[in-house]
Image (cartoon, helix red, strand yellow):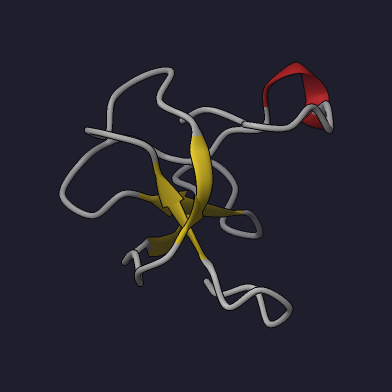
Length: 68
């Protein structure tokens, strides 16, 4: 996922694990996008090869530096 305004990519800061921030990075970062196991109308965005996925905690609170 690339920001067309800045050219940066959505990535993670450091090794993917619980609590690691999702940030803008200067290199492409691969994501796996798959249907949710319980609600196929919802998609989940995973770090490949892990169970780490983007989760907007607190009902989508817009606070910057969301974590995985």
